Length: 292
Image (cartoon, rainbow, N blue to C red; front, side, top):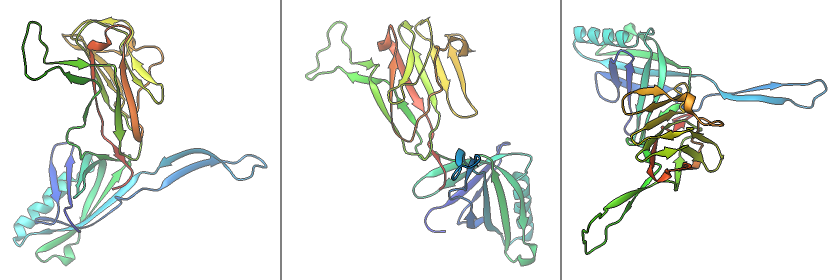
């Protein structure tokens, strides 16, 4: 391995193990991290030239880690082997985190019990770990803070500064078109938030390019908070009314769509029939990669 490469596997019980260039868990080689096979489903009609494409999808991902436990003390080596067997229990799924010089990536996977080459043991016990990822996409977690404001703050200070009655240092500006760039390989969902600071009517988040939106019908009081999760397998809509979180799907505006962040540039805008200036928003999302 060249440069900084480290793999961390954490199972759903919270137990983790780190593979890298330092003992006790050395990593020599990894496979299955590149782009996976594309599955093209087609159909052919009678007398048709060629075929008609029905769907295009990515196959599942199989990964393999080759390495060795390095430990001169025999009893300690057996403890490390027991640790690997316990953490890579196929009854508990986990997340594999891959760190390199250029980024950090995660993928959910199911472990296959590690195999040890007892015959070649010296101070090193070689092993192979196989992992299966039903969803082959890696999540790019390089950006620690993936929070993107969908409203802005406009400074109102001038120098020399003179503070008078009702002076404002800054004010929130909502309703502007905000550019969001997805540097991943695939469209992805995200967590959209709308926070109401003054009474608002029919608030919504609008995708300028696709003309899709997600909104809420009615008037909402100051302090109301909406969360719209459009991530695959996590889609949900909820509202905090100042006392508790409740399901807000019943209040969604007719025609609302679970917005996606497409590859490249996206443009989102907060809209409302009344009170858009008091409706603040933000977006959190993670780019998806088809290989690292």
